[in-house]
Amino acid sequence: MNPLFQCIYPDCNNLSDLPIETFCPFCSRLCRCPHPDCRSLLDFKALVDTCRNCRKSIMIGLQKGDYSAELIIRWLEDPNIFPLDKRDLAWNFYANYYLHHLPITLKGHTGPIFCLTLSSDGNSLVTGSEDKTARIWDVDSEQQRAVLKGHTDYIRCLTLSSDGKTVFTGSADKTAIIWDLARSKKPIILEGHTWMIRCLALSNDGKTLFTSSGDSTARIWDVATGQERAVLKGHTGEIWCLTLSNDAKTLFTGSSDNTARIWDVPTGQERAVLKGHTGEIWCLMLSSDAKTLFTGSSDNTARIWDVETGKQLAVLKGHTERISCLTASNDGKTLITGSEDKAAIIWDVDSGQERFVLSGHTDWISCLTLSSDGKMIITGSLDKTARIWDVATGQERAILEGHKAAISCLTLSSDGKTLFTGSYDGTAIIWNLAPRSK
Picture 1: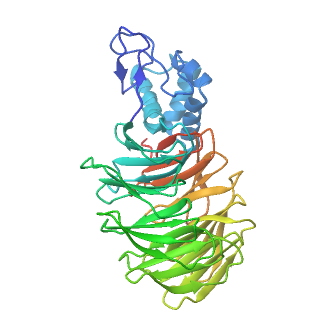
Picture 2: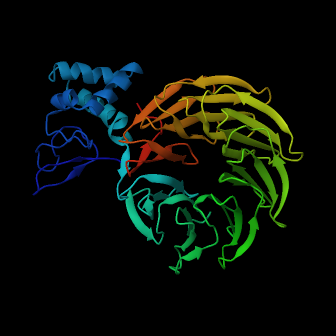
């Protein structure tokens, strides 16, 4: 996934992954800056003066007190001041801090990307778009592997089986589709909803799919046959969100009727109605021990519920606009909420108090995630940027710029080293977050 210097001459066209000089090591002619917004055909000094991205990488090094960054600046002032071995050191800084950490843009969709998911092994990315297609990308090669066509309206949500062999998509055309990638079977179309499908969830064993819709119902489907097993009725408004317990025995839904509901999956019966919010419930999440449910609402609050009793445990007040997304730490002690007020808040679940307010975005936060070790938060916004935050201090660690329109969705690899963002600009971007070597 590392960009390379490329010789500009057609009769050569060689690549060099260790740019010790700005000239092709095969034919000794000029190379290009690999950044897509630069592509300069200049010597290194002029290149750094011209390319904002090249210059930014050196500034990062200077701020960190990196010796090789200082070398590069001194070298630019006088190219003859250092012998070749010192120039190599400077170039190695450039390679480590810049070339090997360029974001990779995946292009192919002809409309905004609304959803994406990553395979459990981190090798495949699946994106869903307004262009009515889902696309499968190979992460290592950055190539598009497949285009899934079948929906007649935009794809609103999707998920992937744990083995990566089956894709599930939900659409504004009121259907969900099961795509068997391994056996190239004809897609199974799930029909029954009378309004667009808002969200879906898959049981861990991959045998049962759950969908929710603007028609106020959630439905349970048998993946092998595509048969509808149950229709869950009770909500009086659109179901905006759902989540499933690990054993797939309990389903949780949040609705525009201001309630969340708990459903017994084996019987299809409603177990509890969680009342308290005074606005639509836009997002929810279940704690890893399945004892606590977190909800976020257009009433600007997040609420914590006891799953066993259905009792409201806490009301978290701090946002001044609708809560659009939330996530919780694996131990259930930390909740993070994102809002249309342009801020995210880190909450202490036990006390219900704010730890930090994360301010920096200039438009509302559309999505967020937490690294598996609980140390890093990543937020995506309509301001076209993603931002990385330190959980322990609440400090902003980085701003990721590259999209040309709002970021609609994101996901993080299990090791926390690679971020994937989807945008209304129709592209997905792969960001390498691994620590830069010195």
